[in-house]
Length: 519
Ligand code: HXC
Image 1 (cartoon, helix red, strand yellow):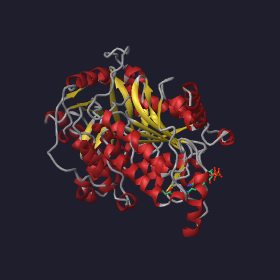
Image 2 (image 1 turned 180 degrees about the vertical axis):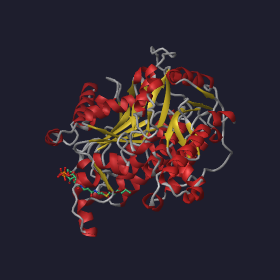
Image 3 (image 1 turned 45 degrees about the horizontal axis):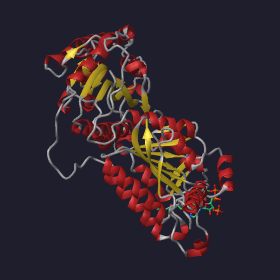
């Protein structure tokens, strides 16, 4: 073959590969409001940066006449490129080829990019749109999944792993995204479940739709499986780019520092009056977050799951930080099972990837009740406690108002190796609130008082006495548990100064194979 013909052959093969499962299937994909695997990659990566691997790979299956059905690239587009100039590896499942189902060759392609990402220390982004295990390949497909799972596990805490679900993701296939750091789901067309509606009907008799069983809304609000929900794929791909901007490329690097034009000593007078007079009145802690971080920009994670705790990324003087804050606007900011799970996972992610933690505390305690106890709040709360206690990244805590009981300890207190712990003058650091404490401390005296009027007077006096002693930050400051009491409007400056001081922090945990966090 002449050289020109060889070049033509190459170009023809490339054109063929880029057509995936063919025009008709691409049209069908578009008609569902979905992009193709390659279109998604184009939107995700910097223009022209994608370098594709394994375009000429095909499956090797000969069962059920499969040898007659071959498509170049075999249902997944893989390679590397850049996001804002930073290297990332990507795989994008192609539903137009055998419904994006996973064959042995398909799995090998994914493993290849994961292995290389680990060698060079770059994030892996997986765009999922698949009918699951390729039925014709039987156990080879299951083995392929397990190869990927093992790599997800070994890469965990070494390189960031991000999954977007833009179509079906069912059966054991859900476990690869579940092993990654973040899961994003698009509102339309995406669902995740271990067993689909038909199996559910057969086994439990329950009638349920795909969306109700495993749609984006369900996983964002009820199960907590999805960290992000997006209206459409375009928005989702932009959001992944933004997420990457907060993260280092691997666990040995720091997150990129960006230019900051927001003055570090910007005073926020609104913060001096944000805490209501009445301690039972709520306020929105996201207003506090927005007031202190660079340009008021907060990238919230798990927004719709356990909204009584707020977590997410921001920049402080251009440094990437993880923010964890109790939300008085929702269930008074109490810690429950879901908030504990959410907080623990986020804190561990930040610690694994050298992202300093800022904790804003306004917590009345743990949620009481049989529902919580039967659900294992003891273990879930312990997870959150464990996560903070083992974290060695810089930890700056600001107590805004309540910090009661066990929840005080959990929320990055000094003894869990909190580095710099500040409190506002409105802080109340105690075992519990005044009314609960008074009822317990003076129970027998109260019983002995007959007149209702006298009782009310007695309670008011005792509550006042308790508040004078404990409903302030000075009792904790007296013991050095609070490093300083700061003026709320000055919080941004004080926290940035703290982070600057801690930038060279070195701390470590004892050598061990791994810990035994209460799962
Ligand atoms: C082989 C598959 C396939 C699969 C879809 N296709 N899923 N081929 N193995 N798992 C093929 C179809 O035959 C069809 O081929 C094309 O992909 C598009 O599929 P449609 O059914 O026409 O599309 P749609 O109506 O949109 O339905 C999509 C779907 C459905 C909901 C995903 O295809 C489906 O239910 N598939 C099976 C899902 C499943 O049960 N997978 C196994 C889960 S268990 P043609 O040639 O007609 O276009 C699992 C175990 C993993 O994955 C274990 C890990 C440990």
